Image (cartoon, rainbow over all chains, first blue to last red; front, side, top):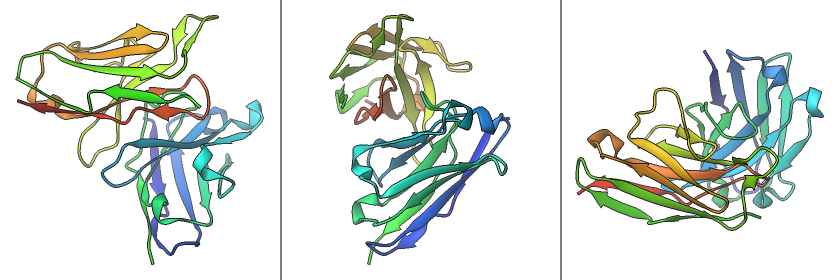
Length: 118
Length: 113
């Protein structure tokens, strides 16, 4: 069974940093393109970015609002995806979801909430 | 960047009646080499992650009731619920994965009239 579990969310001050993790199981993680999608409270879905499999180059792509503040990485030995978020703003407050796909998203975790507030 | 615009933002439909949600892409998302529209539809209920309903504009996912159908091509797409059930109350999103940055529509809230 495909499963992804996000963790690492919490309260962080504006300008601060936080690293989210996504533990994956039930599929060949090292072959999967992985993505992050977020949802601000009461708002719609917003694509954050994705990382290709290392065999496809391991490159990353991001939404425009990221502007060099976020970094997606992966550890295939741990079947884990990461989202390092720096220079956080109030508007980054959201539930962050990961998904094992670089295209449409058939599988979702429950997400992890990041709250940016002073 | 491609912008996805859904209409309406919300709609109220009587149980058993048809619900129609439209999604318009600012650019073509039909890849001519494989004749696939890179468009998906999701359903999201409160407190839950989204659920994939339709991929490639019209391919219903396994286990999704056949009252849900997707249509359209190029820039204009439609999600139809042929006979609304109480459990279909949710927010529905379209999503283009033709190119990055990927984009979702703003969502359409479906309620029972």
